[in-house]
Image (cartoon, rainbow, N blue to C red; front, top):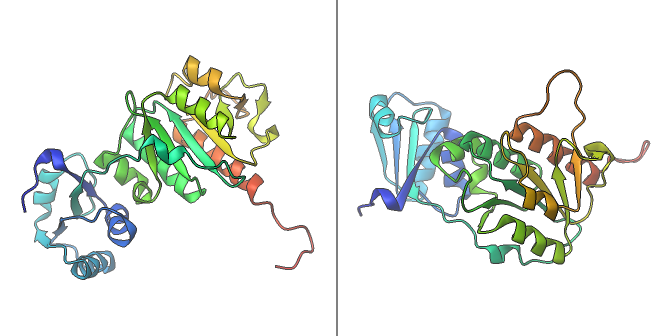
Length: 256
């Protein structure tokens, strides 16, 4: 079978490739493995590929460098069908108390998007929402930075983020945006219940219509001279404060 460039994407790195093999919905149609790799992770890739009848081509590392010059591939590449975003109808779900969504308002750097996806998966986020335009997408760099999380967290690309946020409010979600001028600090805000955490783009922050769609704005308290955090770091701080509030520690003296 032949695949045109428009039909597939290349991912690299053992975390990303193993994640696709283990639980990705889209399986690779070919894997390239450096002929200098014979360690446990390389053997795991070979074994999983054999189980799934995916051809593995062992090649000089220079071949992998030429095939994916922008990737730190660690000696493994997987070619797989280009991942499709989930449709907006995936958001038409009841706003149960456990539901947690992350909305990214135009994050441009694929490394930042990948890092946000990685934290979102670790913190139990149900879906990540991004604008269809003016945003990083699920490139090979994004998926490498996500270390497998891009294959496990639903990513929903929407045509109009502000309109989508208004719809989520109608469904019963509480929208909390991160902004330096927020009246409350993140740690003062109640982050329980059906929640959408809304993060702005690098440098620009939240756009006006996105900001206006939020029910409230909160800020991360900052000491020293640093004015702001990288968006992926800020997302991690916010998501884990939400996680902490949603998973309270057992009371002192309680049995484990």
